[in-house]
Each structure stands twice: as C-alpha cells, then as structure tokens.
Length: 158
Image (cartoon, rainbow, N blue to C red; front, side):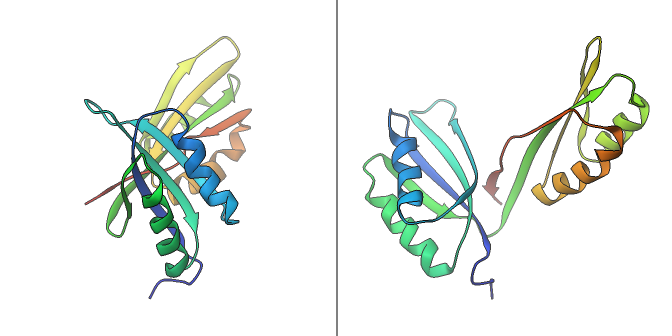
C-alpha cells in the first residue's frame, strides 16, 4: 500500500498549443497542490507534448487531479506511472582548480561525464534516477560546485 501522501509521477499528453501549460499548473495551484518537478517537451513527429509532473498526495487526490486534467480541452491522456523508468539530469559547474579526474570518475558512476571545459570552470553532466542525483549532489560538495541545475524528472512506463 502506498503512503497516503506519497511522491507521484504523472504524465499528461496535451495538444501542443498556447496556454496549455498555464491551465495545467493553474489546476494544481488552484487546489493547493505543489508541483515538485515539471518537465515539458514536444513528442517527436506529432502535434502533442508530454508533461511529466512530480507531485505528492493521496490516491484520492491523484484521482481528482486526473479527472480535472481530463476536463481541460487540450488534454489527450493522463496517467500515473506505476512501473516506470525515471531519469533526471543535472549539470554542475566546478572551478577549474578542482581535481578533474576525480570529478569525471564520480560523474561516470552516475551516467555522466565532464561536458565542457572553459578558462576558469568545468561543467559536468549526469543523468540518473532522481534519488541517485540527490546522492551525487551530496558527493560532489567536496569539489566546491559553483552552480547546479536540475532538469526535473522524465518517465516512461515499462
């Protein structure tokens, strides 16, 4: 049995048109539900986009949200992921003075690598499960990251 206020991952397939994103986010905020992560991208070779929404709530709350999303005209499909593959990307900027070999080795353990080297900085990228990204970000603190950007989750049913 899932926790009453468990983390939920919902995919929403929408017609790719203006104002769709604001309608979806208004639905959540209007009911007092927080969106932890929101990723939006067009579906290749179609007129649709996929929104991957990470939120939390009870089964009843998720059913309400799903019903409300279906009432929005441009929504084609809404589903909560049960058995899924979920990934998130993070990019991290480090000072060039840090140990690049150690940073790269750590990145490789999280499906990543150094992707750019400038005069004063190094940028690394990792792509893994959100909890593993959390672990990676704790591990790299010793290398004095200057900036961290996370993409938000994307997910597909198995």
